[in-house]
Image (cartoon, rainbow over all chains, first blue to last red; front, side):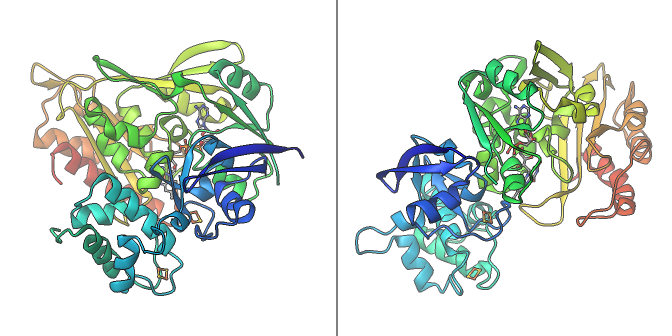
Length: 158
Length: 272
Ligand SMILES: Cc1cc2nc3c(=O)[nH]c(=O)nc-3n(C[C@H](O)[C@H](O)[C@H](O)COP(=O)(O)OP(=O)(O)OC[C@H]3O[C@@H](n4cnc5c(N)ncnc54)[C@H](O)[C@@H]3O)c2cc1C
Ligand code: FES
Ligand code: FES
């Protein structure tokens, strides 16, 4: 099987890899680039823990054919912290106990970032909608919603 | 298992590659194709992609609108001139699925999916397809009835006439999980009014048969009448005629038959 060369921007850095036909972006990121922040939960689009931003838009990396990001910009949780400082969303998740086992957290943070990048002061309903494709099985959604609202500095307005 | 990915810059080349290879699958947004690959579906050995700008074009300025097959639901939602399609677009998936999933892929999505297509069926949309022998337009109902046979044809775009008012087109998806969840049933109604009477009623149902179907008996109950309580009751009681729902994890066939008339009545009477 021939491999296909693939270049894209990964958290602001140019990367070049060779992928097998049919490889999804999650596998490419984890196994070929070594970025372990997007997680594998289901491989079916159902859980959201593999969420990344492609050109600023929230995408599920497990359902993204790797080749489709050629020349585009991919952001993962690995690129979120600013130098030694946590991103305000990460800080808020830690402060608000919004991560218990943490398995959903990478996807939750990327979904939250996609929201705040477009809408810096979302309502509670906006936050619920924004993370509706992300499943959390242990923390529960309330602390996560509150953390996102806290990071936005927004007040809950239902 | 590795597959061969063929990327074309123009739609007719992609259509040629699709029609000449039975095991080739076109990749739209990939939300269903990649899922199949991740599950190890060995029936797919070739993935065909087209990066033709014609496939992602939106023409929403006039009375007749056209959406390229590769237009995503997020783009439909960003288009103010497509307000009548916002409810069906918003009812699909979570935000990531709306950023990825396409109008063209939705035409092929099996139950419990295919919600946008329910809206298109009620709007009497036309599907432009390109096969090995050139392109042609197919009425959506005919397209859906022959969907199994459409493998190997590339959908280029869908088009429909803009409803006369927001009252004239209504959509309702019943899901157990909110705001995101698979459809128990999905309903759309197009109710053009002429001289106070309904002329050309279209009622489309999702998850009430193997593909999206029109509720013809309900349409007949509405035709030529004004939308009063008696007419709505007659349409609602005719809603199950010709349907053949199945059981799945979201609901039983029995339950679907029980609720379809209730939700059609609510949709027609403008209730939440
Ligand atoms: C978590 C999750 C939630 C979902 N929720 C919903 C929902 O609420 N409602 C709903 O309706 N759907 C839902 N879906 C299903 C799916 O995302 C949508 O139906 C979407 O519209 C499929 O489009 P796509 O472009 O991603 O399809 P793809 O996966 O790219 O393709 C699907 C099928 O259509 C064919 N195809 C695609 N484009 C063309 C074309 N132009 N010409 C010919 N064939 C083509 C493909 O070959 C394939 O067989 C969901 C999916 C996931 C993973
Ligand atoms: S791993 Fe991608 S959505 Fe679950
Ligand atoms: S913190 Fe464990 S799944 Fe969300």
